[in-house]
Image (cartoon, rainbow, N blue to C red; front, side, top):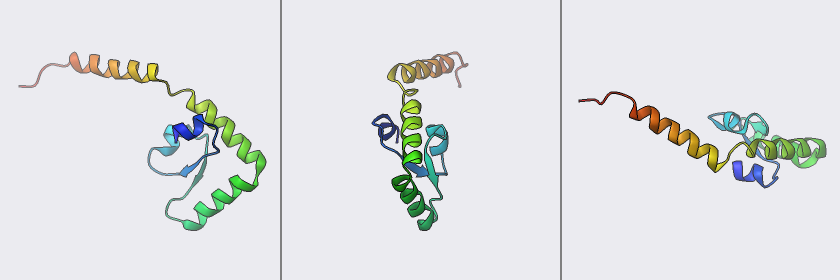
Length: 89
C-alpha cells in the first residue's frame, strides 16, 4: 500500500484493520465484507477524476512520511527502551 501511494497510484484499501491508520486516511476505503462496496469504490476512483487526483496526491504525501531513517530511529528507540528495563529472572 505504501509503495503504491509512493508511486502515485490512486489506492483503495479496506476500512478495517490497521490500513486506515497506516494510510493516514488519505485513500479511498471500502468494506472488505461487501463485494458491492469494493466494486463501487473501484468504480468511483476509476470514474471520478477529482477523487482519483485527490487520492493520488494525498497518498504521495502520506508515503513521504515513511522513510528508512524514521524506521531506524523508531527501532533504535524501542531497543534502547527495552535495554533500560530490569532483566526478568
